[in-house]
Length: 208
Image (cartoon, rainbow, N blue to C red; front, side, top):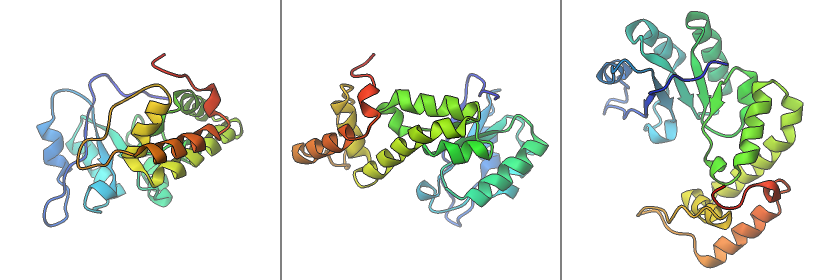
């Protein structure tokens, strides 16, 4: 598995008013002889989708274009992208934007972005390592526990994540306004649900 080179430039470009994305200008603006990646997260890009054609078109125009981070859960797009992009650029990096690494790894993802690693760093690392070695059956139990966590935080968002890190002894403060802070009662309820997840007891407590 190829790793990103040191000195990544990463950001989610903002769509223009006509709904288009100018990755070319964005990439040239960041031409610091660093490899850089783009991000495909429709919910933060005005629901503008990154297409396979758009990604492939960047290879010749942006030699510093290293890969794509995608959290669309559009599996058909991801399979097509990885297959065609790797044919044109064998070291193309495809990073999945959620913790569902078994499915993403099976189609060629080289890594993942994980907010849950703030809470369960051990299980996230184990999931990544097992998927890296294509031991998907062994990774199943880790994936199931992380799927429970994903559903748990779906309704609380950043507020719940902050409360959970505090419960794990790694207080990261409160969300920045205008995001709310989870109140004490809901924080306790969240802690109880986290404690019920079988793997959480083996996770480190505190900053160690």
